[in-house]
Image 1: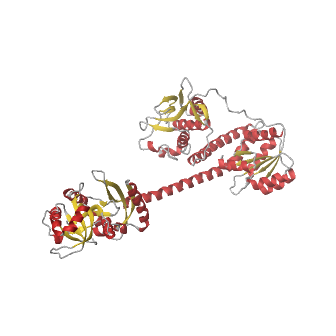
Image 2 (image 1 turned 120 degrees about the vertical axis):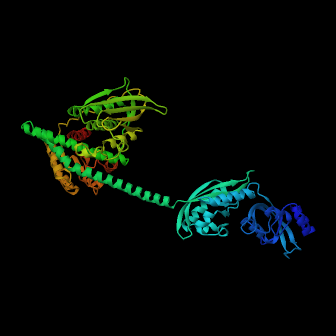
Image 3 (image 1 turned 30 degrees about the vertical axis):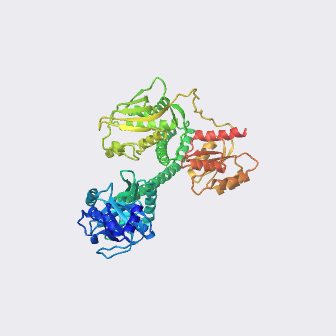
Amino acid sequence: MQDCAQTLHALGPTLFERLPQAALLVDAQGHVLAANRAAQALVRGGDLPSDLLRFVPSLAMGRALDAGEEWSGEVQVGSGDGVRPFDAQLLQLGVQVPLQDSQGADGARFICLLQPSPVRGRDGERDFRSMADAAPVMIWLAGPDRWCEWVNKPWLQFTGTTLDEERGNGWTQVVHPEDLERCMGIYSTSFHARQPFVMDYRLRRHDGIYRWVLDNGVPHTSGDGRFLGYVGSCVDIHERKELEERLAERTQAMRLSDRRQGEFLALLSHELRNPLAPIANAASVLRTMEAENPTIGRLREIVERQVTRLRRLIDDLVDVTRVAQGQITLIKEPVAIDTVVRGALDGLRTKLSAAGHTLKTEFPKEPAWVDGDALRLAQAVSAIVYNASIFSRDPGEILVSVQARCGEARDQVQVRVKDRGQGISADFLPHVFELFARHDAGTAARRPGLGVGLTLARRIAMLHGGDISASSDGPGLGAEFVISLPQVASPAATTGSRQKPLVMVPEDTYRVLVIDPDPETRDVLRLQMELWGHEVQTAPTPEAGLRIARSTRPQIVLCDISHPDFEAAELLEPLRSSLVGMPVFFAALNARGRHDDDEARALEAGFDAYLVKPLRPENLGRLIHAFATRTT
């Protein structure tokens, strides 16, 4: 081609007209000065006067013209709106070529050789752009130099711009300024890597309003693998984007509501534990007095029964919030699931018999093992069986079975609980494990419990890597719940029972200081320990306790740390200083439950033990035994 340019320069315009290849003479500004016969025939079948020929160079070709450099790529040639794409090669002539034609022009600096695009010929290009203009989405084309070459009519109608305004980098003028830098980063990075991209941004509509659009771009190549640029489409997603933002706000509000609900339940359980503690301790004191008065024994049984019921409700509230917030700690070890189930059922047999239900069990010949917390798993099984009992209208049979299943991914142990009760309707079945969900709301007042048992059971199963499913054939046809847990190999040797016998209170007596803001709790603890022969002093505040400690020099200090403003270190340091030279056992009492953070904070501050209120007599006895063991 360079030889052709040199020959043209030597022989002049006559040779230019006779060139068999379509050619244009172009000046340094990109204006067409002349088109030979082959070029006119190629562009418009020979019916285009050369003086009407319009040449639309790309931006990359424009830069080559300015720099006086050779270039190859795609250009648009035609007249009026009838421009068409052609593959072009721009060659420098070296010096101006004088022309003797009707235009009277001279000064040709370049010759531009044209040929039909091998990929986008005249008919194919016309069909593509016709279809693109009729498409319900905005479509754009970019060349290998990253500049925009063309956009369809829906784009122009949306933005209210012209094609010339959009070409090159003009399309960026209708992108929201806050989104432009991000979009250009994605666009440039993807273009450099020649990888597809997806991005969303706000595009200015013809009325000046910015609307969110989703832009998808993919690399475009020729049949021989030559990179031609990118083709992309934009769709208006403004309504969807607004809906997503509203959903995000709603999700954030729900998370805040869940957090506040958890905080409320934690506060509620704390406030309920405070009056429950002295009631439970008072009942234990009554036990020592009932031998002389049988009436006291009957009253004590009523109180203990109701305290047990309240304690179970409070424990459920505490557990379900702690599990939901990920604050529960499992003490895992290999356990035989049939042993767990038997233990859970033993605790329910009295209630089931009182309701007239018959319990039927099926266990495998060989025990199936899981890696889990035996107490928590028993809690989950109890919740499922108890739920089956309360939703059986008439006394009936409850079947509990343990099965080992071999699956494709892993072996599982399944605990199945099937009843013949009132069943579950199809519309409620998806909600059966939701917190506080109550089936048959019209009779909810007659059903015991808070509606948290199934929620807690499922979350315990999930913490063990399993799950619980529910099924029912419909109202009146019973229901079945299946607890599925990962099975583990049987341990080589059993470690025996981990349960410890109840520790008896030592015969020795000690000086005890109780620091608790609740007067009834102080009185009950004092009465309990005085019945065991101990010398007990009480104080409502740490300051008052410090004054008493300096005079009585206690050997055991029980201190309530439930108040949020209480700092254990501020109390322990002066107490230890005042009691230096003698062994002292410090125990922290907390009415908020067994929160890992509270326990860790108390032990780190220097407490020797951490106990949860209400304080049961056996736990109090173990505490005194621990002090006695340490000092002997």
